[in-house]
Amino acid sequence: MTPYKKLSSLLVGILAIAVILTACGGTTPAPVVQPTPLAEQSTPTVTADTGAKETEQPTPLPAAAAGAKNIVIFDWAGYDVPDFYQAFTAQHPDVKVEYTLFEQDADAFAKMQTGFQVDLVHPCSSWWGLYVEAGLVQPIDTSKLKNWPDVLPDMAKSGQFNGKQYFVPWEWGYDSIIARTDKVKKIPASWADLWEPEYAGHLSIPDAAENVQISTAVALGFDPWHTTPEQDEAIKQKLIALKPNILTYWTDSTELNQLLASGDVWVASGVWPETYASLSKDGIAVEYIQPKEGWLGWVCGYAISSQAKDVELAHAYLDALLDPPSIAHLGNDFWYGVSNKKAVGLIDPEVVKLLQLDQPEVLNKTIFYQTMTSDQREKVTKMWDEVKIAP
Picture 1 (tube, rainbow, N blue to C red):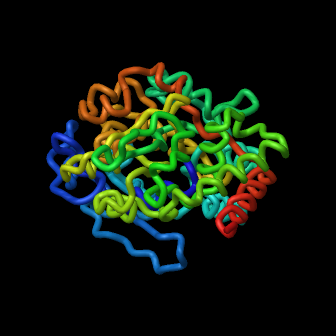
Picture 2 (cartoon, helix red, strand yellow):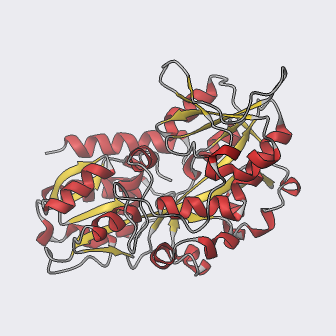
């Protein structure tokens, strides 16, 4: 997943699921899979990584005796949901699940580099290689995960480095183009169509260096992760040439939804399916587009910290995340793809249809974010800063 993505999408709240699901607001009907009753769940302790004092919610289970264990998850805001680890709670009712939350991949990586002690961390794939290189995570023994055989092979492979499995891919999704079909004559069919003069003053793209560099490279026919200096300059100039079309750079999905709903923005890029779901539910004429070059795709997953206190508990938590009922909640609540193929049948058909979850071959047609080196990331960030200040 792109570094800018998760905070805004997950802070919006859990998506409501109706005939068409919505990304924020509304009334949430019962999910396809009924959650474990709260009386049977342990409640996580959540600490935002902001220096704020830790707040512990009331625990429905009695406190364990002296020596009770805990497991600490370093995660995105919005993932501290007991439904996601029901099987772990059932197997380890005396283990307290605690969360420390981060806002961006860059923040999480920097924090981990300081020696921050957690058991599991949840970065996205464009950062995975850096975690391995820095020795921040340890190999996973997939023989300890009963749900591992059901993980999509291509997803599993994405978490491998040096022949070892360092990450358990959990969720994935698309960054694509959305258009107000009642506002534009030409609906975009390609990443290159963002430059159409028809969209002048009515386009919004994300304020995210990695996303705009990759989408522009794809529009130009370049390999985004192996560009030459000449291609880098071409990408920069192409983005500067896009500025007459841009109304605003969006940073938050709620803001983007409002811009599209008002009609100020006709076309937007770097958009997630949940935005389409939200606007469609409100009766707004939008289309979520699969560009001819392919969707951009992100994958995020969990790794065991090299400083984990209890590696066995960490493996048990990973396996619980992959349990079909647990991971199906993710698909239903957030309109994300899931790595366990057995969970697809438990996900709302509207989500399955839009994301093509029942067509695994779609993964081969999706341009997934890859690990960037520190030098690449610095170069891309510098380029994007220069684009934004250019006249």
